Image (cartoon, rainbow, N blue to C red):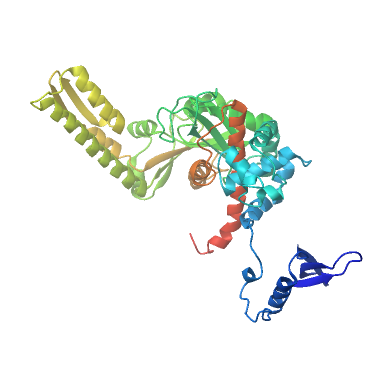
Length: 496
């Protein structure tokens, strides 16, 4: 850098801070700042500092802070990284080919969701000139925007969701490839949105309304599409809409959908997947189905004496392959959890028994005792492992050891279920791809808590709730590519 004096015809010379750089074989310069209004002594001090000399006062300047008066700083590096990645992915052009204020607001909301996730009001304040927190608002020309501009941009974006997701599918899905699908819920603030319902809360927020949304990813975990459902929608009921989306919107005739055991059930396979020729699946059996396989002899525990993986057949699953696996670490973990739950249940039942047997104000009546016992068994989910006898003034309980032992024998055993022929997918590959569902769980963690914080949702209009979730998916799309680009820098090649 250097200070240049540029003469002018009718006014005092311009004092410019410039920087030289090389472009090919040519040396060029660019202006970094206009210093014309600076005091001449201050300009001279900066000039001598850049040359490595002493200042006019005889004191050595050790940093630029000695020559500049810092009025305000605006963090820029993280903004440049996120906005640059978004534009490199072509997402800005995909949202809309022509520049517009609505497009800039959408881009700002995507970047802000990665940089500092917060409400739309707080996002608008972080862009506004007097309260900005970075250079994002200046780069996008949104220094004088407010929350109403962001809400209008959300309404503008929703009709474009289908086209954007179709383009993602065209980029990252192909005929015969694998796709990961999973569902989660997130709680809701307020009671006015028609989508908000009481349902099974994966966030542990009992009594709060919630929405449910399903995320479809490619085999690497890159998000392709998201769909929002009412909060009381069961997981299996969403499979049909995904098959329709793949066929009608994405135009794919052959695809393998990977989903967990609670979603791709036998009923969904019979009603939604089998009729769709070319759509295969990879899922797993639930514990009762595994117990039936052991009971009828299709699955013999001696198979795991020498190896931890074996392919079996059963007449209960015609046209499908079953791959039985045993994970010793999982067996140990399930055994530990069962022991802790059994002990916790016994402690709670013992307290109820003490209440029944105490001399002062004892607990009396079958109904009152049964309500207390039912609450304990329901909390720890241990009904099947205890035999309970309730009288008007008595409570007896004991473990059903034979049931406990039968369940413990199946610890660590899981059975992967797939319709993909063996010549196209080996047993080991089927198990490996089923485990790939963990990347969707990682996406949910990132979207809900760790990074993007989709919850809690404060919007009341149905369309804006859908757009809010879609914006978080777009933000995760950008974040996913940033993580992939940084991975070689963060981990050595020898790291596991």
